[in-house]
Length: 222
Image (tube, rainbow, N blue to C red; front, top):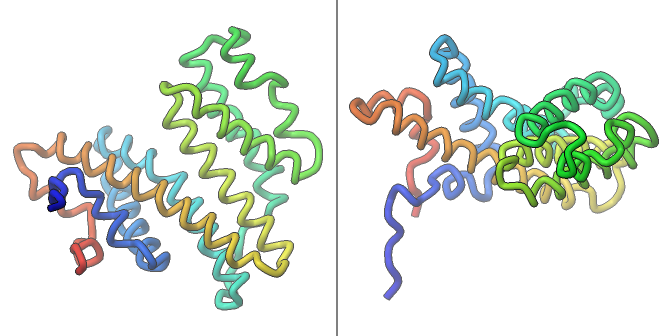
């Protein structure tokens, strides 16, 4: 006889958005907006900052997936725009996160950024995307950089989805579906972490947690 999972260990976001990327987008967008509305609270601002970049990546990947399926005609992100205009800012954040733990030019920092910024700013778009994926893979070796690893792999998922959309080759819908599913899991796990933080913050008034989630979308389904 199998044991029923203890309720706090059950990631309701992961379970109840399975098989529905659209439902996931609606749920993520709702919590994202609700956190954004209460950013004057430093604790809530921290949770918003955890969710914001990976939610935006999910939204881009979702749009690309819909575009390749031929069911979406809205504006989608440009690979050139992101790599040319956002990459430097991303690198500043990534370098800062690494060097907050491992001093610049220390052996570990050099292992993570052996060629400094060059692989991310020079070369073909394909090679630059590969460099981002390599960085994400490398960061898995360092537990203190887990949060950064999630941000980097999330950004990679976004860039790869844009590249696939622009190529429009046969089979790209399936590959984009895999990227979108990977991103759904990342966001759901972050939502679960935010739920934990909210439970700690409102341990004396748990009803306050409810205002950050649309419970109509996360009721456990049979």
